[in-house]
Image (tube, rainbow, N blue to C red):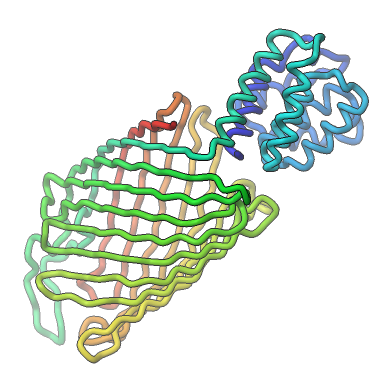
Length: 428
C-alpha cells in the first residue's frame, strides 16, 4: 500500500501545476524541487514559510504533497482536512486526501474520496481520469492474491574472488607452509543470473501469508573453483508495519566441493510510527560440508534496524549481535560477533538514488587449532546507484571494498568488487 500511495502522489504532481496553483505568492522554486524529486528540500523550505502562509490554498496544497512524498502522512492529512473544510469542491485536494488514506492503510476512506471526485459534475476530465487511475491501483493493491516474478543479469569484476590472502605462504609455530593457488587471492571477472518468484495472500485480519523462492548462479572465469549457485526460500505470516514470523531455508553449492545448508526461524517486530525500524531474532541450524568433513552449527542472532531520520534524513543504522555455537567432535566450537552497519540514501542524481554504506564486524572464535583464541575484524565501504525510471525495469551499479584482518595471518585480505545489474519484474 505504501508504494502505491507514493505512485498516487507522483501521478498527481505531474498534472498538478495548473492555473489553480497560480496565486499572488511565487512558489515556483518549491514546485521545481518537487518535480525534480527533492521533496525533503521542498518540505524544509515550506516549514520556513509556515508562520506566514499557513492556511493559504497554494501553500497548503504544496505542503500536503511534500508531506506525502516524505512519508509525513499525518501532517498531509491534517493540512488537507483544513483545505477541504474551506473548499469541499477542490477535487485535486481530494485526490491527495485519497493518497493519504491509502498510505495510512485505510482503503475504504481512500475509495470514498475517489468516488466523490468521479461523481462530481464540476470535476474536469483530466482530474476524473486521475481518479479512475488511482481507483484501479487501489483495487489492485487490495487484490487477495498477488504473484510476482523477476529475472536479473549482472556483470562485474572481483579483485579477490575467493576472499583469500595475497601472501603465497603462512607461518604456524615457526613452520612455513606454501599455499595452493586456490588459497591465494585471485582476481576475476564475474557474471550472475538471478531468478525469483513470490506469492502472497491477503487475509481479512489485514495480515498476509507469503512465500518466495530465489535462485542465483555466480560464475568467475578466472577463479572457476569458487563458481557457485545459491537457492533460497522462505514462507511466513506478516502484519505489515507491525510484526512477522518467517521460516527461511537455503543451500549454497561451490563446485560440488562445498555445501552450506541452513534453516532458520525469524521473528521480527516493527517499531516506530511508520514501522520503519525493527528488532529481530533469528534461530536456526547451519549444516556445513567440505571435503567430506561436516558439522552442524546452531545459530542465534539478535539484532535490529533503526531509523535515524529524526537526526539524519533517510539514514538507517543496523546493529547485529550474534552468537553461533557448534559441536565439532566433542569440543565446543563457534563464533561470537558484534557489528555495526550504517547506510544512507541520497537523492541528488535524478533519476538515480545514491546510497553510501560503511560497516565494521568484530568476531571472536572458540574451538580447536585455528579457532582457538582467533579474533577477526572486517571493515566495509560501499557506494551504489539504483533507478526504477523504466516501468518494471531496475538498474543497479554497486562498488564495494572490504578489508578483513585476523590474528591468523592466513585470513588477512582485501577485496574490491564492481557490479552492474539489470532486473526485469513481472507482476500479476
